[in-house]
Image 1: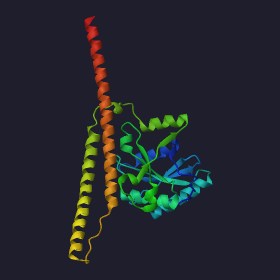
Image 2: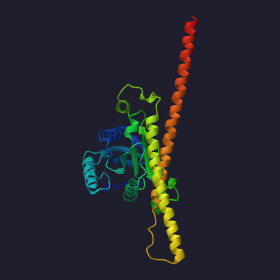
Image 3: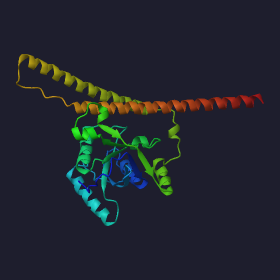
Image 4: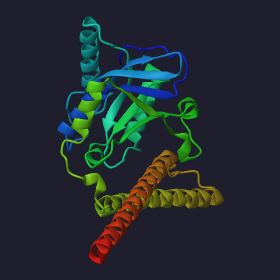
Length: 294
């Protein structure tokens, strides 16, 4: 797959260089509405920090999976050229753009499992949301599969599949200014917009879709339970019904939990803006009353 780095210790923090972040931001924004992937390069240090110092995109194709053969060839060639110019060429994971926090899919799970199995237990996936970032705040998440899931390929609940790792940005002064310019390219006050309806409506729409999908998975499991019980009661061993995959239900539950957290975040920030607007309105009324009294 790529140059393999030996883990010194299990990492607990990802230190992302500003230049690597800018490359991810540029790639994801320029490729919209298509979701894209790329490679992360860096090194795991002895103090439990994974340093990501460089990134590059995978070639555009109908199969954007980083495990595709053409992606592997491109990645190896890129790393060979980077090594020739003394740039970090240790692959430490991959990144992917996401749409309104949607990431908990079987394809991402399989790709991340291959990275942590074939590359290193410390390999991570960075998820960047270009749409939410363009409306006020940087949305960048880092995940890896839990140690128990990698070893057993089984999880009792949705919390035992992915674990989030905190991301720390490290930039010189000029990089900080450039990142600020890239993420907020205009001088409008979108972050003070009182309306959160578009985001809440879209999240509710996605939430309803995932809940419906989860309900269908539950119906499949109930049908399998009834059929199996009936066959065992009749002593019928022929034509067993295929056991439904429980992993799909766990992934759906994890994504539903993510949407609920995001909706709580939007609602909380909306209340804060309303209280701020109320205070400013009252202050303006008091100043107006004082002026009229004079």
